[in-house]
Amino acid sequence: MILQIIVNCAILTLVYILTKDITSKYIALIPTIISAVLLWTIELADINALIGLLLIMLAALIIFHYYDRMANKNSQLRGIVPMGIFIGLLAIIRIDMASYMYGLFFWAMFWAGMADVEGLKLTLPNRAIRGFGQGVFFTTIVVATLVPFVAYYISQGTIGEVLDTAAAVFVDGYRNMKLPNPLTDTLFSIIYYSPMLVVLVSVAMLIVRNRRRILRANTPLFWKEMLIMNLCWNIFNYATLTPDIAHTVPSMIFASMLLPLFLRTK
Image (cartoon, rainbow, N blue to C red):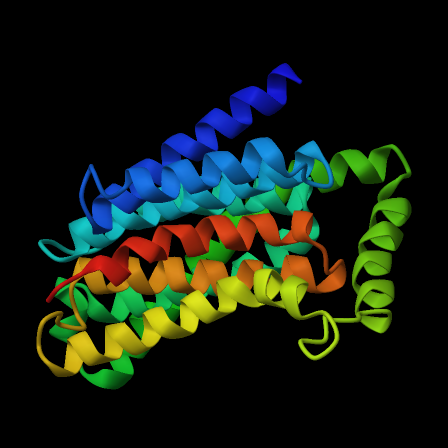
């Protein structure tokens, strides 16, 4: 119970910090309050899911700072290290969540490598090589974080059980997946699919703002907003294997962080 309170408070703090970075300190209170209601009224499946969500947000915080730095100077690989560690730990805590997040952060590093100060000076093929190299470095940190844990499981002879459990999560989960039908479960479907609707509207707004030159594509703010949208979209996979409100909470929290963007007047 105490651990859950600590993790919940840490998540709410990060919701506020991340949202404040793309809006303002007052508007950031909106998703913080929404997230607090969700966390304190809807019980997630287990504490590991909460810890997993916390690790994802910590990785997002690191990449937010990374985006801020790359606009002014060359990317530094050491800035990727904590991000890789958080995703590596996520794979230990919740391998399903890690499978949804790894590709997202890999490509985030890829595009960051292409779009930073040094990357923009290169030809397109060299930019792609630079970006891919950053993704590979990120992967190396993730794997390095996993190695001690994998070695421990092997030494204890339990690695087979771990792999069987992980396989069951995906194989059985996707085999028995039954998503809500909007025609028969209207109210539940509205709640369940609401994060996806928020993402789609946010993407449309981002495209409009970019075409009107209100927000340029190669800016930290653009990348940060895109990251939150992708986090919301990817973590929704967590709710597809067990389609209930509890498993939708992580995506709802990220969706709440996008809601303040709807308040933009320009």
